[in-house]
Length: 533
Image 1 (cartoon, rainbow, N blue to C red):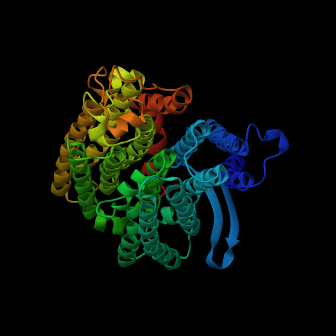
Image 2 (cartoon, helix red, strand yellow):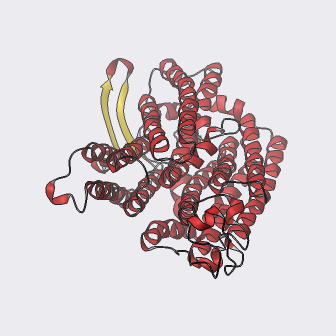
Image 3 (tube, rainbow, N blue to C red):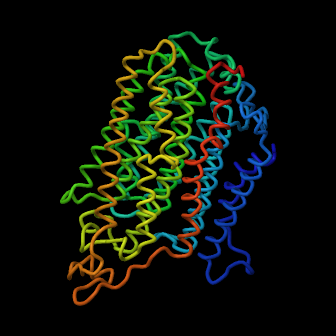
């Protein structure tokens, strides 16, 4: 178990180095690009297999206990250690990261993104995977910061070199926002470590803030929280996200939404809640207020983009929807209750599955029609997916209703538990204020349903027999005027292989939420109780 966790974290990094080396003569395949893309599938597949073995060997009777731990002295003067471990909180995120990265590598093998060499692309994806996995596995504040920052450069180059229109400004915006937030976060982490005398996250969680004064906790939560909020992203620190998603290649958008956003909310749960509870209690109402504003703002932005004539980009719309969904995660954390925090962790996983699937589907629609513009894709002269590509249209509708929180699918439980947590927040928090936040959040679920149903109606419905005429975008896809339009390719085999696990897990988590909650609840109870089971 100890070796498995270390392998899961380190193998992608070693694979990234190997990807940059010349392929052995017997493994070159048809061309060097195919060889390195196959290498990416092999490495990410091995990491996923190791993560699944880690799940099988995990002691599910004691999910609150740190397991598969490694603890090696690294910088004795600062008591910085190479400390790895996993419990019921981090294990689902490790598996989610390994799964999404493998599916992205598999998808890219059959449909490589347009851009520079495949070697650089595969190496960057593997470095990104290693940094994300390390963030969820490390148990030292300094290592957490290093892993947290490790993902910035790979994602910058994935957007800037393999992205679409506007990729350079979007990539710079992503880096500048996250770097500025991280500088403030580093100061907060140093403050906690130096004042408490240790950077060990397990020891700090067990101490539960008793070694830190209230003023130190308040300053630490403010500093660390800013860096985590930028990565989450929390309104109003979210403005880098729509540009990054719109410009990123399909797999970049999947990884950005599916795993990178989870790093911020994980930091709130793993560091701030147990290490600085008094500071969190001070800022919890403000965090909840920003969260519900983000829920409503994200939904209204999506409604504006979905409006006919708005020239809304479908990728941009899904990006704004992430602002709203992550608002529910932050609201659950702000309640500081087991119910709310469990709901936040559940919503994290659900968002990774559902939004990852949505970005895969939107990328496929854009590939087929040459555009993600909703006005072009809508109506009788647009996509009409139900008639032209029924499986693709059905999957898009499925992902949309999962995202809006339909009961029986994964999106429902996280939002419901979050709202229940706000109904009865932790002792010391204003219940009238949180009841107000709960009401606003519940209203946000209605707005979410509204814009997603509008998207499904505009993209999936319409008369497939009507030709789009001689518009440039129609000619580019072979749908010119005169006669019936040529058929649109439905779901291909490699797309089916990449998307089916996400759809299946969305249904499984919706019908059997105890699988996930059984892991997270004991660990959350222990975390909020100051290390006591």
